Image (cartoon, rainbow, N blue to C red):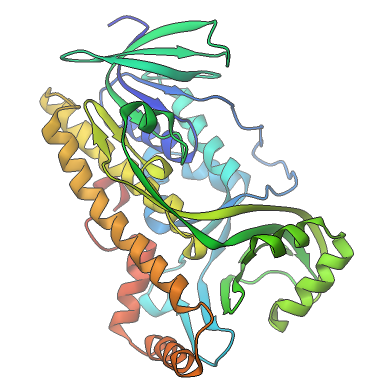
Length: 411
């Protein structure tokens, strides 16, 4: 095998692509290349830079994957906020559900972590491995199929003047919702845009944040607050595109005033807003996760409504499932991109992801403006769920990634 020949080439070195590379570097005897167009800005352990606006709620299953590759300490050494409770309630009625880690005998439900911290902790891991080449900046231009491999044309330049050639037994698209790999493979993606956009901001409150995430459902869209370290928090405000645009453009003082008027009093006094950003919300699912010697993971295969924070965790489970199958193929010296193996991966992950997409879509539609009788039924359902005992505990474990058909690296 030459320096340009690989067992697995992963296009996309973000959170999910880097997790897949780290899992393969730790648990499989394979040579891997990761193609990424831009490396994240440094965040040295022990430093205290401003918070990034992009954060994720990492489940316990995702934490276990980090631990299995030796990268969790790299997260903790930088910055992570543990949360033990999650409160969800109907902003129009009285119904609510309160999830508490103590109810099921665990220490935490998860951690809120900046996306850059996630990526850097995993990059630390894969850069230590002699099995992984991190090639940046580099992106894929095209590929050609052969009986036992793919030939890739890649480039560091947008004008494609500096083309290089790589070969791989398996090509993985971990390159996000606009995946070049998916488009090159001709895999159809069904998309549906929601009416809402999401406004996100990092804020500072007068009181220190507690160990709880909360989400209120309003007629205009959900409102959420995720705890960060100290008195910082990540706010998510869902609204129509025009209102989100207006809220982004007003002064910090005006924004603070509107947020305090619109968000629940439990938020307390808001001292400062550090940054604001927004994005449209799209539900999308690839018709297939696989093609000849190709597999899709993460947002390249699916995007979900962010209201439950499950998007990155679903992608991490994709990575863990594919890594497990590749590891088994490596041990048995069989073809890690055989149609049989890739079909196993697709059957394993597509059904679970489709179910989560449907559940989150159902929540979204249930809490849109409704007639009074529907609102009462909806609110009552939240209250019933709060007292449902075993069913509530099952939902908690499923959301934490501690139940279901889990890959072994997530157990």
